[in-house]
Length: 632
Image 1 (cartoon, rainbow, N blue to C red):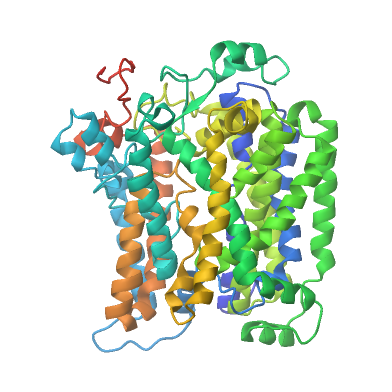
Image 2: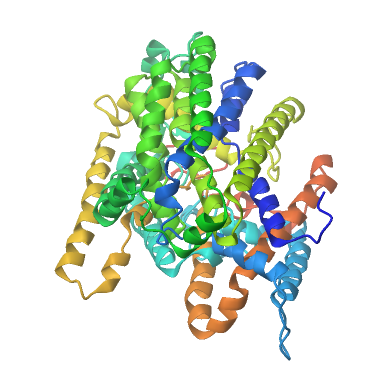
């Protein structure tokens, strides 16, 4: 125990400890997919080993790329500014100006206000999480419902007066640089309001047979696909039954999002090589030289504190890879992934971690490159859904975990935290998080009736698991059926592969434009990995999440910044931290006091979007029958 006053460095270390376990342990989706959706058994030990190795593998990649993504001043990690401002507000002594308030006073007011307010969207008046007022104009019109629904349609005019709705997928809009906000908004508008309507009303891929916005898997007649019927007793695809049942169909929006994933992959590689390639090469060559390029924070830290030795990271990396190989060999019947698949997943992570890291560190937006891992193993080792899921978490999720650690390294740099104590806080926080997440997930799957089964749960249930559902559907598409039967020569969506070329060409055109018109500085702000990857989280993210985020991001990133600059400098990031904290505290309180006991309110203010816009998910093709929908 520290006998002295609680200081900012202790506070930061506690935050780093919490940050290491605050995000979702993504491998829990493997547990839910196998046990809840595929209805198969999964022993606890391999499940726990998958969870812990997924999280700790990221430490290895983080250690390898510290020099590239932490030390350069250009890698500034915008979201860290929220926490830096909050720590400063809580710990720096500030004189109150007449008629004004200090940042700590402002933070406490925002925290209490957001805490009290969230009882409305979180429990008493949940409809305000997605106000789809366009549906009210003609509630019996399928077209109007499709246009107006913020959760199941295009969400024209839909908005959520709820911080959780606003920040849940894209992060805090108050931390987004205006350039990133513009790129995200352009990508979102083009995909949702141009590409999707054109594809739907031209009936591309029989779009009208399925909902306009859905991550579901369908039969050719529009009914839901019975995935369990095409699995044999070895947990592989039963080719004969699949041939009789017919190919899996997707909503056109879902197919387009996969195409955009392809485009984002190639755009990220080309963009980083063209705009940051020389810097990465110089940093790689100079990583072990004394006179390498460092920002002021790095120089100060190196003068005063010992660095974390590289071998600390390498030990964790080697042990993790060894354990993962052991899992793949000893529990092969369970995980399906061969030992060489582990090494291939690690190779992909090594290649793409610095590429994604450069973009996140400068724009605060992470391109969703999970598609590369799914695509590669799906082609090489098809018809094995668990192998595909495991390959994805080791190849892609370890990258995202590495970037979380690297972002915290940068926070420690800003706040002048001794690197070795940072490292220990991250390791311990990650270990605690894995234990808690695994135990909680195991308990929930045993105790919650009909967990993740939307058809058997009440409409307002918080146990519908939208992200788990998308993860499961992806495992069917890429793992069980395989990309060749979906996007290759045996599939109906082969034209989607042209998006790879689109993504590769787009950044090259921007690069040429910057060379041709060097005086036009705005051209370099066109960021195609962000534009093409803007909707990577849709689904499970909904249109209302994006419309609300874009509005708030523009208000604070442009108008407040331009016209109230001093207020923005002093309070903007503090406001974001207060909203996050208040909403989080009330969410926990609602769950503990009411959610666990199933206490809810039934009135029109708690009617969800599926009630107010009940026809938004209806097909519009002739002769397609769906419960609750008109037949054309």
